[in-house]
Image 1 (cartoon, rainbow, N blue to C red):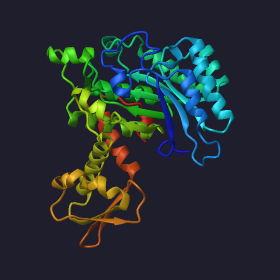
Image 2 (cartoon, rainbow, N blue to C red):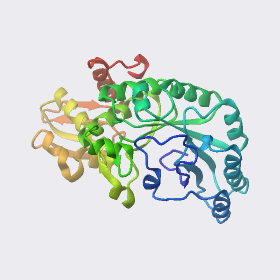
Image 3 (cartoon, rainbow, N blue to C red):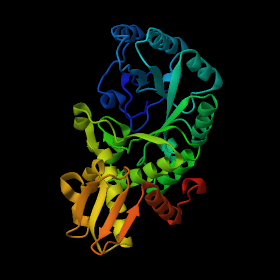
Image 4 (cartoon, helix red, strand yellow):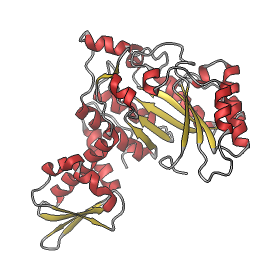
Length: 361
């Protein structure tokens, strides 16, 4: 089953396994709850699921560093999920944790209890940034953790947080390229926002930290998204999941309820502009019907960047591809792969931005 279609049943366990408080984190507000469910409550909720359901959820333990909580507590949570899996009530088990909390003995436990996917809170690949964020792990820990998870056969996900204090846009992209060269299976990109009650809020109010603008964050996330796709990594989320609680608690930074859509709109804007350089006399643009909304943009904002009078039409094209047609019958076709190669080649040529050659393909 693709990640886009996967039905996730999340249980948030804020801070239970966190050895320290990261400067950006207020998990209770991000998750929208104060107290984690007990293992007994998890078991009771799972017991109510119908085993004959056609779409069985995958249980996820999120919001904390699961493999860093006491081992007996891990076993209690995992036992509840494993019993539900054996009864045919769920399709699998996944969890999130720290890169420095997945040693061999821990992975043996996770395998024993049927965990299939492990997501790592990598956040940054710059040690100075990680130290300032009080993450308590290093970039080397993240590299080792991805290698270990893949060697053990787990589906490996990573989370990146561009825009942390001390990190440049180039550093965020370079770091993403470094960890993506290991070809993790999944990626979440959460550009950092300032949440009330965090150390980052204090830094922001004191003038010691300026978060990314929305435009900067969208551009960085597009770069990372294209790197991920080149590596064969599935991007499963871009931007924090919007909730009423989170919207009230965001103090500053690139928060937008449709952040992922903004990234796709920027992709399509540059894709069409690049194609128009190749066929400037074009009068019509054809794309897959499902891509029209992203090409046009929210409230048709992308149209202001295109050639006046250019007609945009739906057609039987592969998703991500576009075709330009001129009045004299000449045309230009741009595939998603060709655009990605063009874009990443530009990144590789940027000042101080070095990308692994195997990602530019």
